[in-house]
Length: 578
Ligand code: ADP
Image 1 (tube, rainbow, N blue to C red):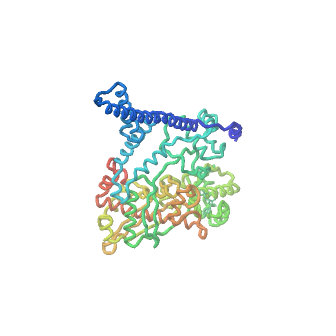
Image 2: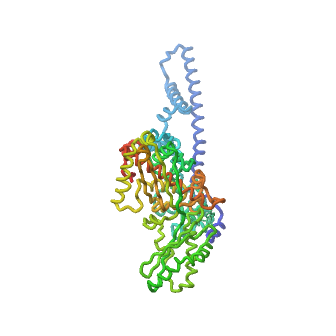
Image 3: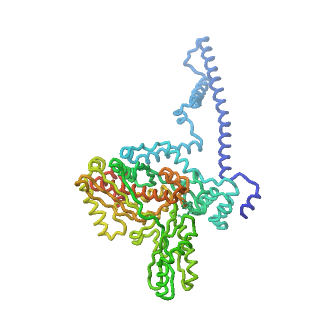
């Protein structure tokens, strides 16, 4: 604020960047007026020379002088005629003449150079681009869009006033901390622009590919991202319709992984043609596990017994639930390591993913316990028995967030015609890859082909915490021949899908639009928690589709071929084979 006040007393002057721009514009207009003068001279010269030569011609005819004998003044006039004629051709826009006879001004020359460079670059980019259009039935990106993007991206960062310039200098010098810009300026976009400019000057690195415009920096303040300098663009593709529990969903997936959306889309098609998938939510509870320490293992055991005694559960729930009208304690699971106790609280959290909510409830209970267990030393509100964003058997076995099972019976015909493989091959591959192969690898929750691909793409599109893909992607994929071996029963069981439709990144404009597309935006007023539960089942359905399609591609030996054909011609396709 102090900086704001100091700076606001200064008269506002034209900023450097703007000054430069204005002087460029002045140059252009001055240049234009300078160019008008030779135009007039050449016009006058042309017509006077024509008049002179015609009169000389008439004079020669009258005096019977041979026409091919020229006086020196006539020769000069002929040269002047040719020169002014060529000049006037150029004036009327005949470009080849212009390029032959006139050196453009430095500015014009440069801009033409840039255009050529741009064209070359676009050509290069286009050449690198895949025949994705053929494969996915999508149109090849139009060149004007790319060129617009390029212009947009390469706009210089706008430090628009002298005040801004002063602040940039102060940030570079370290007298204003970069993190304080938002609070000092009270303008998030301006803070981001100034931070970005300062960073560019400090590092000497270009940020031209990272857009600044087109983002609401106020919406992330204090919630989603600190010290922003721009935003990364991730394309959002659409897979579907996914027919799940009798309803159709278009599933948004944010990814830069070629073939992923197309493949999931194919799985959705197979599911829909077979009558759809159904999913069931088995459990819904977010967890947090503090670690507390006592002087003896016996005291730790005392607390364990206290917490697990059903006589105390009601009191503990009342204390816990004070944290939020949506938080409802479901249980506490304890594990002892010597004199240390890990208390894994599980609670429902409405439509929120619930980490904040559960942490607040846990803090309430710890404060409450301190009365009866004054020797309890709270080491940390999270003791990793929760377990958040790390592979852990506790989530795989006990569940965390939403536990969902999703199944479908894919008709034999559809397996052959859409998935281009057979029921038998799929069942065999699933057994040897997803079950035996994963067992051989000592997998923890990784009994699937690529659940994390789908989970992460939907998480990014819908504003979930992408780091939670670790446990949210735990999945066992099962395949079995049914109906006398004619059809395929396929299921995915996912015990720890951690999602919310309120809080965190879900309220940002793009993410919120993707949630809206799925019909799960925000809080469900009639039945709190229904939106986030529905989202979890849709994710399981999309994973089912993704598993079906990738497993089929593998069974049919198409995977590498399709990646090479569609978008991996210069890359290693194996990187996407999970
Ligand atoms: P998280 O616990 O996932 O980090 P936040 O604490 O950021 O989520 O967001 C949850 C907030 O949203 C809480 O303040 C809660 O009161 C509010 N809220 C509003 N409606 C709901 C709902 N239907 N379910 C859960 N929380 C809700």
